[in-house]
Image 1: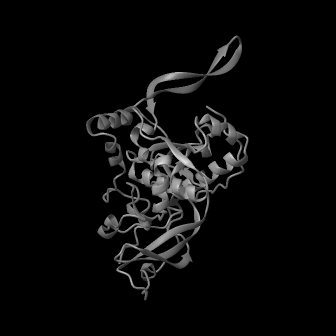
Image 2 (image 1 turned 90 degrees about the vertical axis):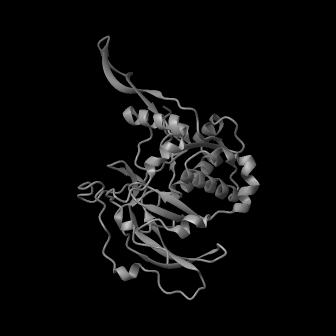
Image 3 (image 1 turned 90 degrees about the horizontal axis):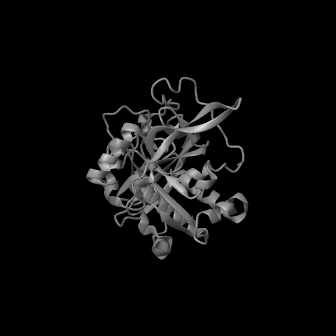
Length: 342
């Protein structure tokens, strides 16, 4: 594996005592009066209002057990979105207050979002800029994620956005938004690959052996197979518009300079959009972006066989059924489901 490029020190947060006592054990923030959570009466003409939340002053995404990427934010901003009959949205800042939970899911923390107690028909049908987000450990949420659709149409062919059609809807919208926002900043991006044929790799482990009187470390196969996220419709590779093989920008990235800056911008955008950028930890994977809440970066064993059987019978979308929200399942993020459309 390619050695990662040394990066600037990253902020780390100490988890509160007892965090893992029950699942994630997320602790609620200081209690707020229930009445405070309702959108205030507004004089702006609108057909509906949505109370939105977004984390501010947040730390880096951390992995905690059970498998989850979270952020600890010092506060949350609130805003009221006014939805008009013509589909337009007016966003009105409201206030800033302590976060609803000590740790927020990384997929939602940095974006304006609402997680109503049950799926909302109005937002389901609204289309852009509203993007549904479904997570078995959270809820059926909705993210306010505007982008320049005119610019999207202009760059679609050159950016090869059609390759995103077969991937998970959340990742598809997130990568489309990332590429459009990058274009607005003068960074040309194109999609290299998305869904790939089903392939698996041998799982290896490090083992110490004694050879000629010296202890050496070698990697040996375990007999198990693992599979990446591309065959599951949960990963995408992109590249800068000027580059042909991915190796070109990787070499330029190592040398810092403009290529390094542009990929760092793309990585920061991915963080905000709730997408995993593998280049954060592996220089050789600077073009790789993923979405798999609650999973590690590869699948193996019985679960791998279950997914392969589902793909053979019902196609790649069968994998995404594992991210459906089940209201009967206990959730450490219950504190997020306190807003609604009015």
